[in-house]
Length: 274
Length: 241
Image (cartoon, rainbow over all chains, first blue to last red; front, top):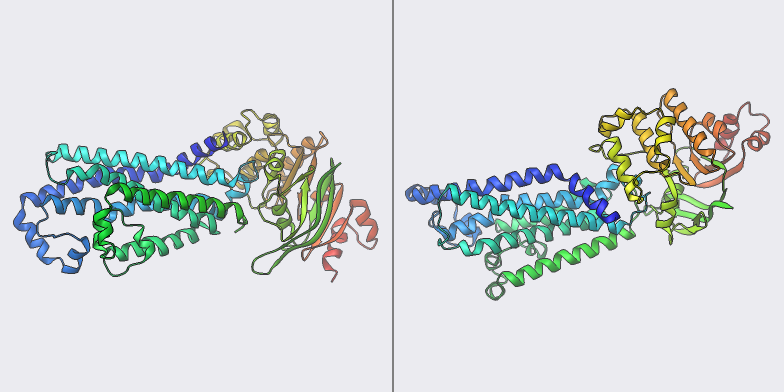
């Protein structure tokens, strides 16, 4: 009962961030499908553009980037777009760091936890609200894609289309795993700013550095949503070949569950003070 | 019956700062106990220990016969609390705030809400506004409503009238006195000695994390015959080494 009250409250609390993320997610796909179609129709311009891109950046994507109109290139660019992942992750960080650290930092924890509310209920309600938001973002992702396909005609027979549904699932599951990892900072830090700082320092920045190919950490490994990324990291070539979407999904689910359990333990043990 | 009991309650923070040391305190059921002391004396630390927000370094505390650590949920079910530095969810209206906290207690229509709205002179249209847009006084009134709307038998109020204008303060005192007619217990942390004199039966003075005095209002005055007022009597405790 109290879980449901908190769940509804947290769903509502992150409404503005969710609406912003939904709109951007929806538009993102349409825009990039449009760009893809543009490159497809203007191959000479695409080649000229690619010739100006430094080789290290091209290598960072982990696939040959000779033709931006090539569906394989599109597939990589489309799903590995850092801004799309960053959008999903920032939404997760927003929710994760608001949990406990946000409540303690803003002082609302005093009133909330003077009521008969268990700290784990607050953590689980936030986690459930975040998961529901992520699922809704997945729907927006799919809707944006379908609308984009309708606007810029692309047949389902295009190579790479088969990867789209599991791709969306993995992207969301990965984002959820990262969001739940930020719960750890939400559960341990004294303020939201501190929790966001640690999240950025230990998750998002290494992920970005890894993405552009100049840094590699075990933490950033968990942000690798796609087999292509595992292949690109060169350290797990065999695992990339042997681990298609399902084992990757299981790994991400395990990260999410373990992070959540650890967050609950931290939340139950900590002092509620700024 | 004892409403609050602490035995050797001690909190030393991680940075080594002393919050409160070996506090032995007993608040009788039905009384109003003022908890006073200079800033940093350990008043808020004690309250946070009672509410299980902080974990004690040693010692124990019980509220209404229940251990504040082991039975924390049941303790919080039975009491009302108004934090000293009240923060509400600014995006909720007053009504939504009251509804949220009532539902967290499993109540839909808290027994004392309507009376409190009258006692605190809150116009109904004020509750339809977002809390973030309300004045400090009205927000504080909503905080008191949240603390007392379920008619708890024990309320802990941490500096409830600090920074409020005299009219709002009067509404507060009026509401607290009316709520008290049901022989409820009040643990009141305050810097306002006039408020202490007006509302309280006994006064507990803490200083530098330790209990400095615990007596009735009359007893404190009698113990300091040279003091012209209760305020002076209390300040004389603050000044002692």
